[in-house]
Length: 315
Length: 281
Image 1: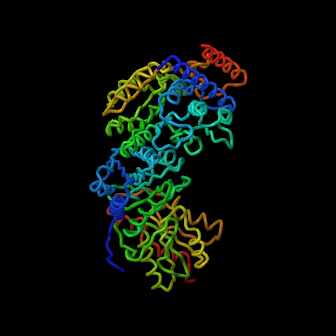
Image 2: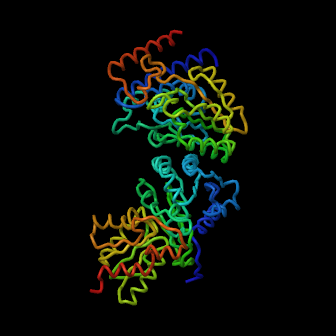
Image 3: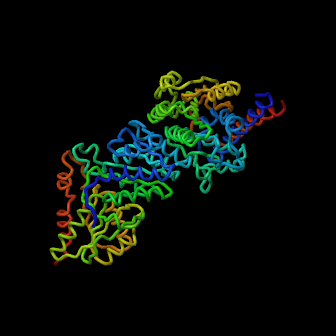
């Protein structure tokens, strides 16, 4: 494994936009007065004539991006997840989703790991909101390598895409020299037979750690990075369920409406097995340092191991 | 505009009004009032102003029109059909299961519709995006958008107006249909959006105030819009909701109600008489 650095995926987003901008003249970036935080300022510095600040007006930004997409350009519209998916939900639904316009939404500051800003800014509902829009691709990367590949895949994809990035940097899990990304395809990071841990975003490195901890306890855990929440990689989820018979999902999102529910919905219809969901338990967040908050809300390897133990695999 | 040109637009407006009545009557639903107040504008846009070609509805260099007040789709559809984008007979399929003529405009099913709209306040934002993109791409096409005087109660409209001025979108023309009525009653009673021209000027727009049923005033206003550089242009047009149908004019109840069989016959009779008069000129 090459250089393992903690890079927040919002930084990856900004860097990937800059690389995309170099390769493609039709990439246009919109922001809503958060360019320094969403890191679209990285693109702005390189391509100032293709970066448009919309001010603090996220609803307008989304519908502006829709109009831009209708002209044949490829807009990336950025804000915090709370405002991109939350405040501007109806613009995303009606002006982007319904006409199926080629708008890419880059939402940073997803989840509890926003940290000190607290609950008003800790969006744990965005997967649920965006999943419910027909035709919307919904993704969240685990690390820098995956995030940059995801942004490029989003550009290549024809149609609306929602990507959730993080403010907080975690351990990298991917090798930059040997990596490919495909929308809608999960990735088996560790093979196993007793339980499958299906995670995305910041919970992927925690799931990897949990897999190692479980191995020390004699439990063989499959670990899957499910970066695409929608369309879900049904084939891989079913394979994991058939192979392991027990599933734990892990995400930095309300346990209502996110990856865990998507997995449960599929399995309940096609291959029912016990599933436990690790996530935010239908509560609002709290101010504090990101790392401490993740532990406080049970978004950790230790908690995943504890939840796996509730499945009584070793009995 | 010659007398013959004006008469052709008047005839188109009359046929658009017929299409509005045909569509809403057949659907037993829809929004005739605001469609009729804007019928003269639809006629002027589609038979005089817009650089469009029914044979090539997706031409990348065409002018764009966004019906931000998307509930008046019956008027837009009637204009498009009469202009040759699709058969006029299809107007009777409005709002029916299986029809491409959805209750509110769908850009992916209706030839000539440039943006899907219906949720108020969003169309003007999309029009801003189109105007920004057109300039960025070096296109000389223009973008037009029509809003209602009730619609502008939506906060997003003012976000979009700010955006248009900030980015100096002088290829954008914002038109406000000031018919004075919204669903729950007069605009002045529900939530006054007045004074509209003053607010637009305060947002940096060059503004023309016209009678929305006077084609000479429309011609002058759209000419001014094209000459105006560096700032966006707005046309506030005073109109009569339900214009052209005697019993619908200025009646708030005709915002979102379809004519029954008797009302349909009366409306079509009035319009047929109007059309005969115009064609006899």
